[in-house]
Structures are given as structure tokens and as C-alpha cells.
Image 1: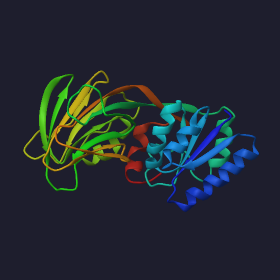
Image 2: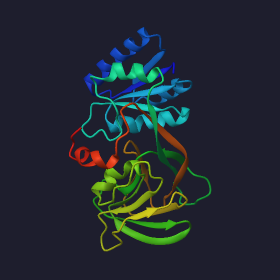
Image 3: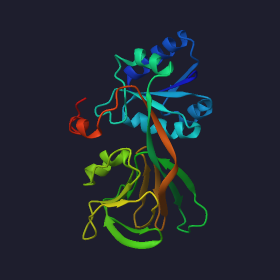
Image 4: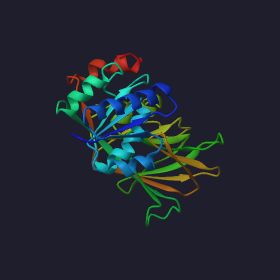
Length: 279
């Protein structure tokens, strides 16, 4: 590995300081390094080509932002944890310099995760999508500022499933199943599973169960609402939805790779500690 990109949480002073320290440290070891705020996605995308590793400094939210950039260049990510849970991060601040040198020398292993391809049709006519996205964690179609439920017609593989009358609907990957989906009553999947989840948020007199979908399945969601609704992709891409908007979600042919250096342990053996915020 040669070229390293550093994406840091701009509102955490410790993240900004550590980013500068790592840039200087890795530069002194002969590695070309660039760094910028994880919020400056366009700036990062310009630099990501030819980058061998993206180092994130923050928490899982910083990784979700970095994922949108890493996907463009098929670049692996390793996270330095400043957050609380750190389901996706790998390194502590104290070990970051030593472990990064080892990783850049060729140590470590890859942890591959599934993504979702998301297409948005604002007009409601499924001819040409208005926007396309990739999601590492989840997509959420939900009510906006007005506290009123929305109706979401859900179909799977073109076959009608149900109409949710709820605060919203979540489609989550196995990586994202311990996030918003879990808070909404969804199950926990092994993060390397290819299956994904479909579940409502606070349904009112409508289907309340979670669907575990095959990677070959495709979900279509059509919103019916008087007040504006919202589409959220990985919690930081947020777009208004008008009545009749359609979102189509399927398993992506792309994947995201995390670079790990700690010995591979069972996901299940550390799950309880991580859910309680313990490392």
C-alpha cells in the first residue's frame, strides 16, 4: 500500500488534531497522504482515485460518510474509534500509529460487507430514476416535520406485499441491522450476511412484522402522504419526498471492504458488550 486518505469528524477537535498527527507521521514514513473532513465528500472524491486505504477518525457515522467515497474507488476502510459503539471501527487512538504501519506493510485481513442499490423516482413514474445511491447501513422512508403517519405501498419482486400506515419504513443491510432497524424492533443478522431487512416504524393498525429478504429480492416503496415525507440514506443523505414518490431497493453488486488487523473473533461473543456501549 502507498497512498492513504484520512477522513475525520470535523466537529471533534480530537479528530482534527489526530488527523494532522497521522498525516505527518505517515508522511515521515514515506507514504503519500491526503486528508479532509468526512463532510467534504466532493473534495474527497477528487482525491480517492489511486488511494489504497481510507482511514476514518470518528465513529460509525464517520464511516458511513466515508463509505460513499470509498465505493467510488473500491478503496478499503479502517476506522479509528472516537465514538461510543464502534460496530464498524477497528482501532483505538492509542494503537493507531503502530497498527497503521503494520497494515501498510501488508498485514491484516479484509471484512467484506454487502451494500444496497437505491433508486429514487420523484415523479412516481418508474421510467428513469431521479437519483441513485448506495447504502451501507439502511434507507428510511419516513414522515417529515409534520407528526402524521404516511402510507407506504410495499412490493417485493413486483408483487404487492402490504401498505404500511406508519411513521416510516426501513430497509436495512446486515451491517445496519444493529442501528435504527434494531431500535424499531428488527432482528440482528450476522454483519456479513447478504440478506436484508424490511420493517415499518411504529405502524398504526397495519403490518408490524419484519421481512428478512433474499439478496435476489427487490423492494419497491411508494409513498402516499399529504404532508412532505423524507428519504434518508445512511442517515446523512436526506431528501424531501412528495406524494407518489417511489424508491426501489435491491442488493448491490458492489461491496465495501473493511481492513482489519485484530484477530477475527466471533460477532456473537462481543455483541452484548457493544450493544451496551462497552469495548
